[in-house]
Image (tube, rainbow, N blue to C red; front, side, top):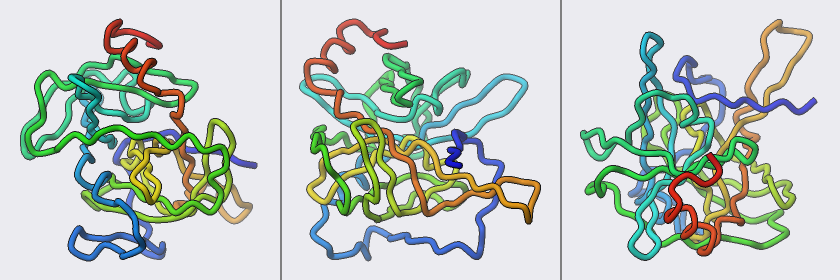
Length: 232
């Protein structure tokens, strides 16, 4: 049975036995990918809930004409109390202007322009068949800090993609890019496996569930920016 974990709380430890594919900016793989798109636009999304605590997820900073915005996962920002983006060492409050829980996609806008994180022009991959496509994303999984990961698409339909890569809580909301720097969707979950050997479900960090957002075309986005509340 396929079960997916929708969580971005930092209550888990890194499995030391897992194989982690992580690259620093000075040692990126030379596989003709535009990894710098995700690397330069990646931003940490923090939240604090009164009397409960806080946590974080990930997102990416984009621009479209005069608009600057962050795309992340809806479950990162839903009922999250105070929301903010981490720009260098500064917290920048953000406002949710679009959230679709079914598609697990959200758009937030910083109260002022980020300075340390630079927005990228949003280019979206609308191809129907992505199987075999090499992908990459940058996010903030668990306690690993900002990290870039590569992988490939093993299965997809019009809404969702399963990639062979790596993710942990905190990776949620990271935008996944193809080798041309086009956005495919956001990291939404990892597979959860149940076995007779343990009463607790186990994460399969190498199977990553990605929600596609090919519907976020220019017309749709401009309507969101003008309305400021579409889909919430």
